[in-house]
Image (cartoon, rainbow, N blue to C red; front, side, top):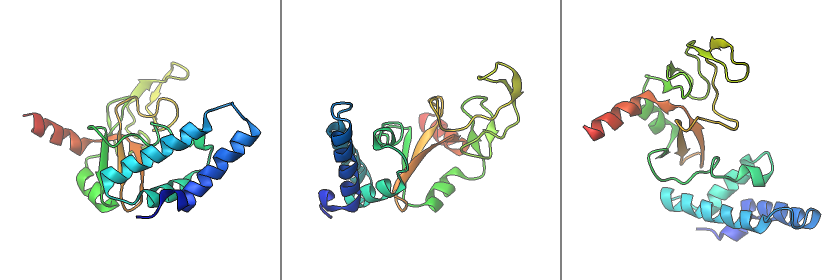
Length: 177
């Protein structure tokens, strides 16, 4: 395993922290965020068997906005509990999902898309209160209404929140029966 502090991802993040400390001292606890990222990367490494330096390199390459917003529990949640799932590769994830679709957290229908509802079920729209076809999307402040799942793909070294796969509902039922 490589030394985390010597990887490009750490150097990139540290440079951003040092810039913020210089330009906006005392505005945020920038060093605490850096420590949080190191703890979270190490958690992911422990749960996946991957090198933490490799994970941080991938995260930093993929980061396109301010690190204080990018590195948060909602973006890199703990890989514990039944809301987070780790897969070796995309194929193993797809095999677990099958062809049954994904449960929309708003309307409860089955969407073919794991990120945006395409059920056509009529719901009262949150923005304007008018009825219309559900078009809920993963993302934003309410992301998944607490009903989605986080998947982490080891070959990609990244994860994302999606609507919960319908196939997994049967697995939960079988486990409790």
